[in-house]
Amino acid sequence: MKQPFLIWAKSRLINIPRIFIAAAAWTVCLPLCAARATEKIAVFPNAAYDACIIYQNLAIFWFFIIGLIVIIGMKLKEIDRIQKLGIDRDDENAPRLD
Amino acid sequence: MKLKYSLITRRTFLNTLFGGWLFAFFSGAFYTLMKFAFPTLGKEPDFVVLDRKDFSDIPNNSVKPFAWGGALGLYFKKEDGSVAALKGVCTHMECNVAYKPEEKKFYCACHQGWFDETGRNIAGPPPKPLEVFDVTEDGDKLIIARKGVKVELPKA
Amino acid sequence: MSYPRLKNWLDERYDLTDVKKFAKSKLIPEHRYDLLYYTGGITLFLFVLQFITGMLLAMYYVPHIDHAYESIIEIVTKINLGWFFRSLHHWGAQLTILFLFIHLFGTLLVKAYRKPREMVWITGFILLIISIFFGLSGYLLLWDERAFAAVRVATGGAGALPVFGGFIKAFLRGGMDVTGDTIVRFYAFHVSILPLLSLLMIGLHVLLVQYHGVSVPRSEIKDPQPTVPFFPNVFYKDMIIWLIVLGVVVTLAVLAPPEIGIKADPLAPPPANIKPEWYFLMVLETLKLFPGTIFGLNGETIAIICVVVGISFLFLIPFFDRKANRGEESTVFTVIAVIYVVYFVVMTAVGFLS
Image (cartoon, rainbow over all chains, first blue to last red; front, top):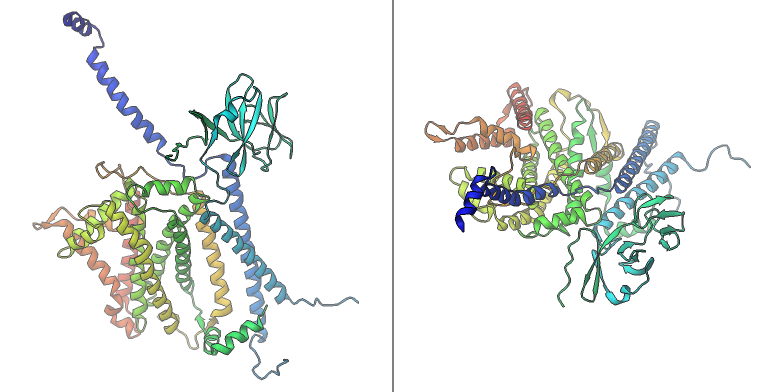
């Protein structure tokens, strides 16, 4: 029973043990490779639509920051102007209204 | 009478603008922080469990609504008898969509958006397809889950 | 915009005239290098940002070996804006350390540490060490391959110190190796011990700066010294710079969210071409310069001793620089400062490119 099978196996160009090892290697490796490939965790919403909204919000955020900077710049100019006029100090002896 | 000078000084104007701008800026930041701190804000379930017999005998080419968290879900039996489930909320402005059996399409009445049987956006303003869920049957239970979510039923 | 009733309520209970006087009379000197003044304010702002984002992330993070990695993935993929806040915390940390180094080297080069401000330098230096330890402990919490390897190397390096090495290593790791116990321990460091210590140190540092006033470089001392009032002029400039920094951090957080590696496996070999955070590269490259054995002694121990001596010298530099303390020109220490800066930049660059 055994003999003919072995002869058949050895007579083939691709012998059975090698196929078996290759198959085993593939069954072990493939899921590992697949795991490696899918393991990359999405650290950013991957839908193009969501990404678009995020970039939009970033632009709005920068608009607000630049707006604030411009306003503060104007305030600084105003402060400079008042300090040059010398009217930023409270007059200690000023009569009180209330 | 027309005043030659404005009654509002440059200083008051600037201060008001500055204060308002700061307030808007901080409210935006605060809202963002709170959105993260409260996971329930706009959060959807991973899966819902329905009674199977409520949904099994709907006719072909029709939909039956179910509650997907606080939003509308649609259980959909196609012409050929295959089933699917999708979120019945338009991806454009979040209006609920309706199924049009005669055209075999989903329709959003708010801004005339159209989706085909697979939920793909085919006409109108919707920017992306409807969300499609996984449907599994487990005894007399019908489990509708978000794609790629492992369903872990609570132990009875 | 005034609230007379609130003002009255406060005035009846607290005498705030001194505080008001101080706020009005606080002056900041104006000179060629006064941009350096703002680097301190930037780090303070970034610290506040780290506290806020850190508090929020702590609401979702689970410090347990089985759940740490998974809870971060949950934060990133499921929680509203979780990816953004993790990224913001990451980039905030990077920039905090960067500006701490800029602040430190700037102070070093203009010799702002000289008498009477030695304690300002000391508290600031301790804050830098705390921040680096913040970075290390925070990094392990992710519990991915890279974090695991980095913490193993860093705590192992501390173990190479003579006498106390083994003790420090065991204390940091909470055992003989980096395990689940290390996560809990580093979590305690990261969210409770270090924040409290840093709050104390920031308070002391800022208080000392108020007490001494802002230093003026020797070459820029004039009589009379040109100054600007802190409030409102410098305060608003500070605010502009904070806004720009906030914008930069948020932009970095959105455009370059940090990757998450594969979950740490204590039995797996470390991934190829692994690098620690950039602020450890300098130490790592220094260690590489030393051969395995020097005159029959353990090369690593000697290397670690050299690094510790180098850092300790920098830490105690105000006490060595006698000339600057007397208000004289001290060229030697200028050269030393430049060497420190150049060494740091070059070694970091070498580590980055290799």
